[in-house]
Length: 188
Image (cartoon, rainbow, N blue to C red; front, side):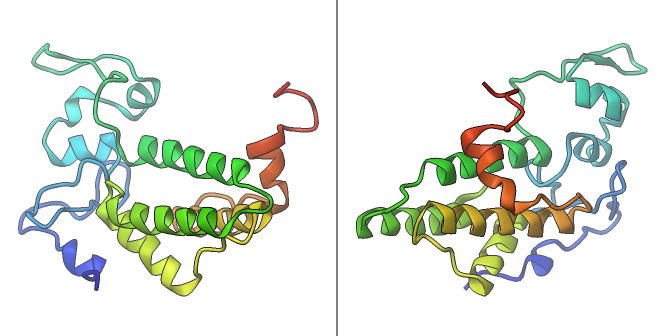
């Protein structure tokens, strides 16, 4: 049984509850900020490196200079923050849904269920992983066919979007977004 995510995220004494972005800081079981559970801006604000990056520079992935004159390269070869990890993960999962068979074999259904279950235990942001496992307990993964899995996954993505204050995606459009491309031809 998974530990309660809120028990895992006890704010260590003297550490901030919220980061520079206003988001809650997620701490690991050792009381350290979780690099893959926080934005780069928030991670740095808690680890005392906030002078190295601004939200605009972090988004642009450019070098920032601290007051001490040191340069920090916010490059593509740094560990991902929660936002980059999330975007990449949703891209992978929706791409799997888009290529999942219309008539999967029992073996393919088992593989997909096993993958999603394993994924929910291995995802780098433990806080997100705990949340996803809870969602799976409430709404078991649907693997009957491409449409069923694609719709289920879109619904799961919207649950996360809602928690993050992001707009919901119209799940009737999931195939256009992730499989066929937009009807206006911009993906052709």
